[in-house]
Image 1: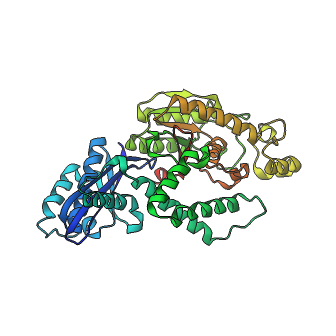
Image 2: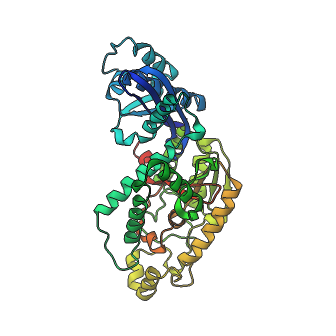
Image 3: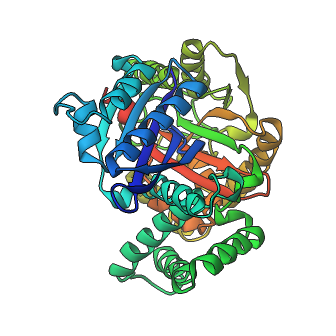
Length: 428
């Protein structure tokens, strides 16, 4: 079953006055915007406009998949409490709208959550665009909308402000310091200009941005989305032993098989995966087989998704490697070109392999959502390359067994990291 997030809002300039609503449907797994709706509705109250936004959002989600589960997020306490059944609906204008909204999906498929207004920027922008269009004697047009753009910019600005509050530390060239400076520079751009110019400048920046920027204009079409699954636990995982492509190739433990079953159940509920591709190693093929069986899909194997070869370190803990091969370990930690003892694979070589595999899979699965069942280093490398982060960032990511991450790749080469190290399905 697929899982959607519906964010909705409505507004009235006068209350009652000229009113409009906005709604957006989001894929709960990837964060991708699936549908937008907005309309100028004439003279109405804020609450009526908010209910109209809710109704439009639910209907848009229903058109996409009537069997989906839907989580509604709105900044209207009134609508959320009334639709949750905790408050009575007394106003005669809202009763029929609430009744219609409740009838779109079975009650068991819909949940409601109040959020602060600042977290509902996307729907708010759509509602204001609809009211602006009404003032001009027009109706809202998706082609002229900048709502998704504005919501992304607001999230980027908030992240930049949060980063600026914490002074980055570290030696020259430190990744955290560089990222903080980049975010701060990004936030200083559109915020200092008039709205029209800001939107034009951001569109221009997205046109010329480097492929690792993660920005993509709305006309790029559906991205190729890679949902990255680390395999379930093996007997070596809890002991934190090096386990690459040159070792014993362990199978899953009982815990690992249970983790794979939980991943499969979660992804089956969401219903977004269209293909499954796995590394050739035993633990990934076994994980992929369990998940694919729940999804009703076949498993393809791609050698490019294999784990790094850790040479003579295979099967050892980090402490054992430090004790036996201290010089080689220090070189490996400092230089992505360095190989593990015994002629293993460097991180630089792994990155080259993953980049080639990524490009091949993007071409093969353009516009589709694909589950890639792979390992720690490949997943971290997919994320690092998408972010344009330095090689040392690999040591700053924590990746749990059977965790999910996601990266979307657009037609112009831009990438967007949508999820990282999600293990919520293992706690269900």
